[in-house]
Amino acid sequence: MMRAWILPVLLVLCGSAVATAQVVKGSPVAAAALLLVFVLLAGMNSPLIFPRSISALEAQRRSAVDGRPVVFWRSGCKYCLRLRIRLGRSARQLHWVDIWRDPAGAAAVRAANDGNETVPTVVVAGRPHVNPDPAWVREQLFPPA
Image (cartoon, rainbow, N blue to C red):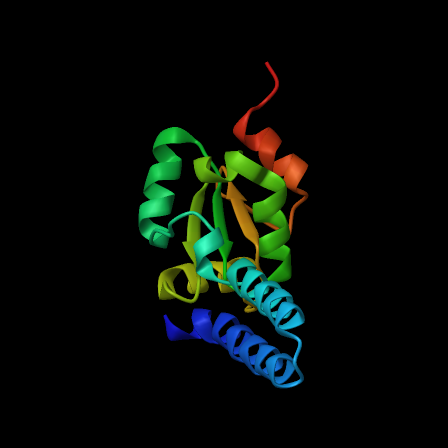
Protein backbone atom coordinates (compact mmCIF):
# COMPACT_ATOMS: atom_id res chain seq x y z
CA MET A 1 0.00 0.00 0.00
CA MET A 2 2.79 2.45 0.83
CA ARG A 3 4.56 1.70 -2.45
CA ALA A 4 1.80 3.48 -4.36
CA TRP A 5 2.51 6.71 -2.47
CA ILE A 6 6.31 6.83 -2.80
CA LEU A 7 6.41 8.83 -6.05
CA PRO A 8 3.72 11.37 -5.04
CA VAL A 9 5.41 11.97 -1.68
CA LEU A 10 8.80 12.41 -3.35
CA LEU A 11 7.31 14.89 -5.81
CA VAL A 12 5.80 16.97 -3.00
CA LEU A 13 9.07 16.89 -1.03
CA CYS A 14 11.10 17.94 -4.08
CA GLY A 15 8.59 20.66 -4.88
CA SER A 16 8.81 21.92 -1.31
CA ALA A 17 12.61 22.06 -1.51
CA VAL A 18 12.55 23.91 -4.83
CA ALA A 19 9.88 26.32 -3.56
CA THR A 20 11.87 26.98 -0.38
CA ALA A 21 14.93 27.81 -2.49
CA GLN A 22 12.84 30.26 -4.52
CA VAL A 23 11.50 31.93 -1.35
CA VAL A 24 15.05 32.29 -0.01
CA LYS A 25 16.03 33.94 -3.32
CA GLY A 26 13.17 36.39 -2.81
CA SER A 27 10.78 35.04 -5.43
CA PRO A 28 7.63 33.88 -3.61
CA VAL A 29 5.47 33.96 -6.79
CA ALA A 30 7.81 31.56 -8.58
CA ALA A 31 7.90 29.42 -5.43
CA ALA A 32 4.11 29.16 -5.36
CA ALA A 33 3.94 28.34 -9.08
CA LEU A 34 6.60 25.64 -8.81
CA LEU A 35 5.01 24.12 -5.73
CA LEU A 36 1.66 24.02 -7.51
CA VAL A 37 3.22 22.21 -10.49
CA PHE A 38 4.83 19.62 -8.21
CA VAL A 39 1.60 19.08 -6.25
CA LEU A 40 -0.35 18.59 -9.51
CA LEU A 41 2.24 16.08 -10.71
CA ALA A 42 1.99 14.27 -7.38
CA GLY A 43 -1.79 14.16 -7.67
CA MET A 44 -1.64 12.77 -11.19
CA ASN A 45 0.73 10.02 -10.06
CA SER A 46 -1.23 9.12 -6.96
CA PRO A 47 -3.98 6.52 -6.57
CA LEU A 48 -6.44 9.39 -6.02
CA ILE A 49 -7.02 10.07 -9.74
CA PHE A 50 -8.21 6.53 -10.37
CA PRO A 51 -11.61 5.12 -9.46
CA ARG A 52 -11.72 3.15 -6.24
CA SER A 53 -9.90 -0.17 -6.61
CA ILE A 54 -11.50 -3.47 -5.79
CA SER A 55 -10.01 -6.94 -5.46
CA ALA A 56 -9.35 -9.05 -8.53
CA LEU A 57 -11.88 -11.65 -7.42
CA GLU A 58 -14.58 -9.01 -6.88
CA ALA A 59 -13.78 -7.40 -10.25
CA GLN A 60 -14.02 -10.74 -12.04
CA ARG A 61 -17.32 -11.49 -10.29
CA ARG A 62 -18.76 -8.08 -11.24
CA SER A 63 -17.49 -8.36 -14.80
CA ALA A 64 -19.17 -11.74 -15.18
CA VAL A 65 -22.46 -10.16 -14.10
CA ASP A 66 -22.39 -6.89 -16.07
CA GLY A 67 -19.90 -7.66 -18.88
CA ARG A 68 -17.76 -4.58 -18.21
CA PRO A 69 -13.97 -4.79 -18.64
CA VAL A 70 -11.54 -5.18 -15.74
CA VAL A 71 -8.51 -2.88 -15.72
CA PHE A 72 -5.39 -3.97 -13.84
CA TRP A 73 -3.23 -0.92 -13.05
CA ARG A 74 -0.69 0.52 -10.63
CA SER A 75 0.05 4.07 -9.57
CA GLY A 76 3.02 5.77 -11.19
CA CYS A 77 2.39 4.01 -14.52
CA LYS A 78 2.24 6.61 -17.28
CA TYR A 79 0.30 4.25 -19.55
CA CYS A 80 -2.31 3.66 -16.84
CA LEU A 81 -2.59 7.41 -16.35
CA ARG A 82 -2.98 7.93 -20.11
CA LEU A 83 -5.75 5.32 -20.22
CA ARG A 84 -7.51 6.84 -17.21
CA ILE A 85 -7.40 10.40 -18.56
CA ARG A 86 -8.41 9.48 -22.12
CA LEU A 87 -11.38 7.44 -20.86
CA GLY A 88 -12.72 10.47 -19.01
CA ARG A 89 -15.98 9.89 -17.16
CA SER A 90 -16.48 6.46 -18.68
CA ALA A 91 -13.51 5.22 -16.62
CA ARG A 92 -15.81 4.97 -13.61
CA GLN A 93 -17.80 2.26 -15.37
CA LEU A 94 -14.82 -0.09 -15.53
CA HIS A 95 -13.68 -2.37 -12.71
CA TRP A 96 -10.22 -1.16 -11.56
CA VAL A 97 -7.76 -3.42 -9.71
CA ASP A 98 -4.58 -1.92 -8.25
CA ILE A 99 -1.99 -4.71 -8.56
CA TRP A 100 0.13 -3.15 -5.80
CA ARG A 101 -2.75 -3.49 -3.35
CA ASP A 102 -4.06 -6.86 -4.49
CA PRO A 103 -1.69 -9.84 -4.77
CA ALA A 104 -4.32 -11.83 -6.69
CA GLY A 105 -4.52 -9.00 -9.23
CA ALA A 106 -0.73 -8.97 -9.62
CA ALA A 107 -0.79 -12.75 -10.11
CA ALA A 108 -3.51 -12.43 -12.77
CA VAL A 109 -1.42 -9.85 -14.65
CA ARG A 110 1.71 -12.00 -14.45
CA ALA A 111 -0.26 -15.00 -15.74
CA ALA A 112 -1.48 -12.96 -18.72
CA ASN A 113 1.91 -11.39 -19.50
CA ASP A 114 4.48 -14.20 -19.34
CA GLY A 115 5.42 -13.43 -15.73
CA ASN A 116 5.65 -9.65 -16.17
CA GLU A 117 3.50 -7.13 -14.32
CA THR A 118 2.75 -5.14 -17.46
CA VAL A 119 -0.05 -2.63 -16.95
CA PRO A 120 -2.54 -1.52 -17.91
CA THR A 121 -3.89 -4.95 -18.69
CA VAL A 122 -7.57 -4.84 -19.62
CA VAL A 123 -9.56 -8.07 -19.46
CA VAL A 124 -12.59 -8.20 -21.73
CA ALA A 125 -14.71 -11.36 -21.82
CA GLY A 126 -11.88 -13.32 -20.18
CA ARG A 127 -9.23 -12.20 -22.71
CA PRO A 128 -6.38 -9.95 -21.55
CA HIS A 129 -5.28 -6.97 -23.66
CA VAL A 130 -2.04 -5.22 -22.72
CA ASN A 131 -1.93 -1.42 -22.97
CA PRO A 132 -4.93 -1.18 -25.32
CA ASP A 133 -5.99 1.97 -27.09
CA PRO A 134 -8.38 3.98 -24.87
CA ALA A 135 -10.84 4.35 -27.77
CA TRP A 136 -11.00 0.56 -28.08
CA VAL A 137 -11.64 0.22 -24.34
CA ARG A 138 -14.45 2.78 -24.57
CA GLU A 139 -15.96 0.74 -27.45
CA GLN A 140 -16.02 -2.29 -25.16
CA LEU A 141 -18.21 -0.32 -22.77
CA PHE A 142 -20.57 0.91 -25.46
CA PRO A 143 -20.55 -1.66 -28.28
CA PRO A 144 -22.09 -0.51 -31.58
CA ALA A 145 -25.69 -1.60 -32.04
